[in-house]
Length: 202
Image (cartoon, rainbow, N blue to C red; front, side):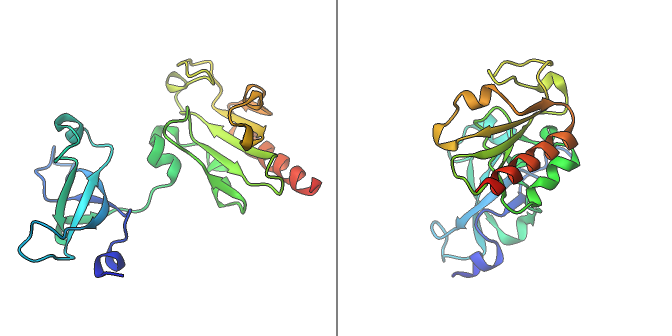
């Protein structure tokens, strides 16, 4: 393992400090460390890193060619704390209530959030691979919510709990939630109780 991998693991979130700030509160774009710079330098050096920018309007303005991936010296990087997957894929406005956040620490629960989905979700990996439980959570502001048909609607509940078979993909299971409502604590309770019942069945 090279020194750069020991010091700054691939995938580490960083803020690059070598750009002119967009404003006094913005020290530069956020990026992801991909690999050390090994070309176009007089001597290859593990002190240089390839930063791939993410979620940055400055990059979007200039396209995602040469501006999207830039090499930055170690001293010009600020290491940022890791983000949970749901936040990285959807953003802070989707932060659920604490009772739902706490589910991520339960043994058997994984964060399966993916930006191409309508909203973030956690899955409880039960003892039965064909009988799983998912909890999906939408934005706190009703005006930002999507219904299951991808239509923006303030009438869409914030939380959904589903009992489903992952092998069947988006089947009729997703048309019949076990819970749909605004109460995160109640959604978390239903999610856990249902998963525990499935585990006891096996």
